[in-house]
Length: 492
Image (cartoon, rainbow, N blue to C red; front, side):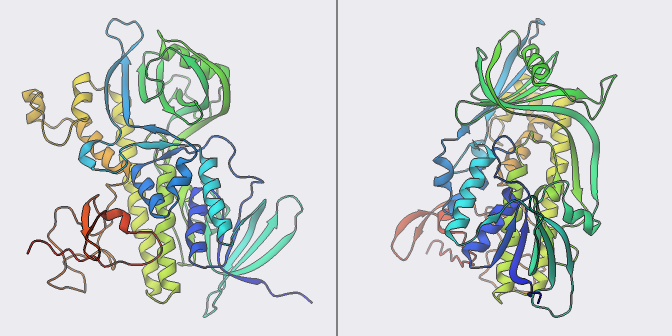
């Protein structure tokens, strides 16, 4: 006699950053999770590696920051910009700027660089402590929302990649964190809209190098007469090089162009001249075209959801893929938790798509503009210096710079706030108060320059009344699925 399918609160497909962090949140809050991945092991090399300041705040509030830092990641405090030398002999540094300038006011004014596999393993260890696990290598072969008043309305068909063992389960929710070529999105018929045609093919290489290039331990954007490189320092004395190997302006442009490690290394040597570079070891290498796309929908029925690369793809230059995925995961996690706990109406799940798709659209718009500015013209040393300053004009600025906003400078400033994570802002809705919200009260703080609904609280030192301790306000908001009510007494 056939057995009935097992019931789960959620089935999660894919064990990349978005799937794992969603699993971590829901496992901590006691949900029964079926989590599968079609790879036999977690990420071994390569892939995403940048954790932005806002994401580090989140990991700290989840008590996961210490485990991340135990791997001794690289930290990027400054970015160096290199251009062709005026005498035509190689490249020279035209300026540096802070990775997270002072006007952002972050506790962690740096980008943390650590290979994705280490980050995944931190999440997996936390999952295991809370009674959950990732089953490998399993894949999804079918799913259906049977609708009605079923408590577990989603039927999911699974199959073991190697043994072909099959299993069907029932669930309240299904989540796809499969990546850009996911089964779930394809079966739902949800299309990806590409903002622009593919304009560049890049090679990415992780390894240990020997070089006399002075900024090899800093993040660098390098333009030369032979092409462009972005350098990213990594853990374990490694560096990552993003190397442009083809452009749509090339006469023989091919968006599917491939290149060997030796060919890419040869290009890197030409771009970095007069400095030399040699590889002692290459840990990971890949060639891929860069496109900017966004899914039409993140869900069709608010039972089957998608997040991360399944919903948005973009250039790696700004280091946003994994960070955007993190915030997709936590946004959906706490909303599912409040609905299933009876604290919120099921209709509040609609805000997942409206909030997170807005951020993805803003990211793609910024990514396109930022990439175009770097490709179309190279900023002068004076512009680079301007960009590293606060929003207030410097006394050393030229009169022209004071009177006319510089597009590169303004884009850089806007990008710093956005890419750090602190510039993320959600529109008014049931959770984010506004003048048109159904609930109004004179005690609500509505006219503050720093505290704005839909945005993170700014880093602040406050006195906790119960024990008169001075604490970091943002440290007093652990991510445990609960709301908190803050009362700011002000001056008597």
